Image: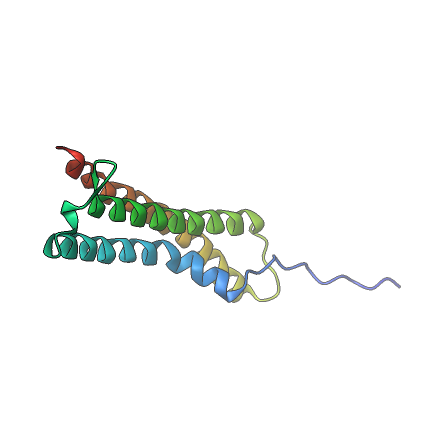
Amino acid sequence: MKARRAPSSPPRASLWRLGFILLGGGTAWFGHLVFAYLIAEFGVLTHLHRTTWSGVSAVVWLIAGLSVLMFLIATLASWAAWNERARDPGRVGDAEDVTHAGRFCRRFGLATNLAFTVVIVIQTIPIFYFLRP
C-alpha cells in the first residue's frame, strides 16, 4: 500500500519580504516627498542653492540623488512583488487563508509599488525646472 502524498503547498515568502512588498514603494515615496521638501526648504534657507557643482545647484544634486535612491527602492519592491507573484502559480495548499493573504499581498504590493515608482518619477520632473539658468 502506497502512502498518499499531501497536496503541495505553494512556496511562502518570509514576513519581512511580504512586508517589504506591501510597504516598500509607499515608504520610498513618502521618504522622497518628505526629504525632497526638507532639502529644498533648507537649501534655500541656508543658501545651499547658491553652491554649484559642475554648474548645477547643490540642492538639485541632492534631490536628484534622493530621487534615484528612492526610485531604486520602489523598483526593488516592485521586482520583489513580481518575483513572489511568479513563484505562486495559484495553487491552494493546506492553509487556504494564509495562501490567499499571501496572494493578496503579492498582487496588491505589485500594483501599489508600480504606482509609487511612477509617482516618484513624476515628482522628480520639476527638478529640471531648476536646471535652467
